Image 1 (cartoon, rainbow, N blue to C red):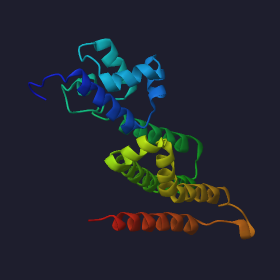
Image 2 (image 1 turned 30 degrees about the vertical axis):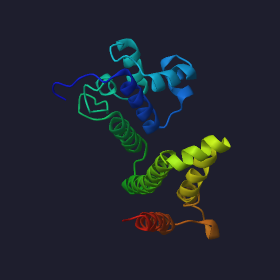
Image 3 (image 1 turned 45 degrees about the horizontal axis):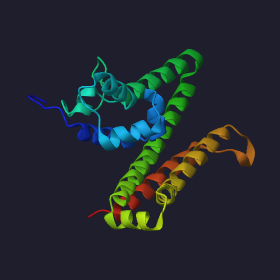
Length: 224
C-alpha cells in the first residue's frame, strides 16, 4: 500500500481481534503465544496498541501468523509469505505432501500399492476439503449471529453465555462431515479384510459422493 498511514491504536486492536478470530484461537491462547495473560490481550483488543510499539506488534504478528505491516495498516496483505511466495498455510500443506510422497517412494516398492496409497490420500483430501467448507459455513453463521444486535441485547439481558449459542451451531453443521471422516478412516481399516467385514474402494468413493451431495444441498438452501 503506497503512502499508507498507520492505523490508530484502536484500529490496531480491531485487527488483532479480527485475525485472532480468523485463525480460531482464544484470548488465553494468544496470550500464551506472546507471553502475557488474557486480560492483557483483552486490553489490546479493546483499548488498542500503539502501532509504533514494534516489539509488541512484532510479537503479536508472529503469534497471529500475519505481518506487522498488516496489523498497523501499512499493508493489506495479511498472509505471511516465504521466499517462494507461499503463505504459511500453503507451505505447510506442500511440505506435508512432499513428506508423504518421499515416505511412500522410500518404503513402498510396488507401483500398484503406491497408486493405492496416493488415490486414498486424494480421496481423504477431497473429503477433508468438504469438511473445511462446512467449517467455513459454521464460521459465517457464527459471525452473523454475533453481529445480530437483537441477539446481543438478549445475551446481555438474560446473561446468556456466547458458547451456548456457538456450540449448537458448530455441532449442527459439523456433526455429519466429521462422521463421514470417521466412516472413511474406519473403512481403510477393513479394506484388506476377508469375508463380510471387507470394505472396497467403492464404499470410500460413495462416502465422498454423499458428502459432496449434502454440501451442495446445504449451499443451495442458502443461495440468493
